[in-house]
Image (cartoon, rainbow, N blue to C red; front, side, top):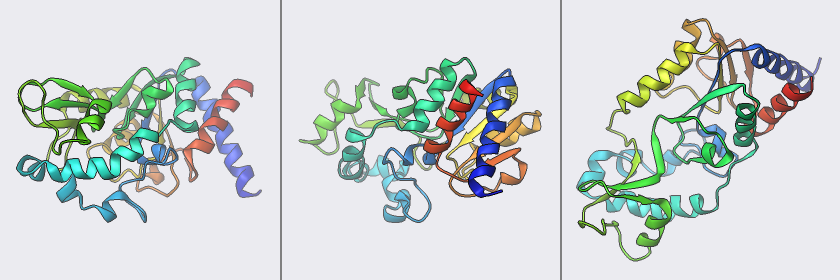
Length: 256
């Protein structure tokens, strides 16, 4: 049996498990958005290989001089975020939800593409770039508001109080929001099937989520281009692009 046939058998098995599951949760990482044109952070062409995260994404550097981050945001993130769209993997997860089989998406991503694709229940572990707020008065701004501001001023300042703006993301040097993390662990601990999509499973405490689900007896499937440290725990592993695999799972769900 060739690799394609083996993968198709695994896809059908995953679809069958999803069909019979009572509570499916998805856990997504950077690989899920890579096919939309957003580079992963690690790996051969990872963003942090070119831009030191201890400078461009560190809360201490940001507090001292936010212009480092906002120059990076303007030159690197803005062009990308202006044109990026959800890919077939995002839409497939939204469709599984629409079929009544997916309860929640827990994501490490900060791009908001799950919501844009139609997912209604999304837990964003690392926050979102789509919301920017004033560190002084808490006034919120959209990403498009800040795109406009960056054309004339870096760093952007609050129109109400002249305070510093920051994105609603978790910087290096900050802890994850404990309430958000608790919600994610609760979902993982109560599901009977956890579908990991595009995560290298090396960043903790987020990578504890599959461990939590498996410990509670859930079926674990991992779809990622490269192998992960937790593949040995998984019931199903597919090393391929999620934008290719997830639509096939949907088709199998609907027609097999």
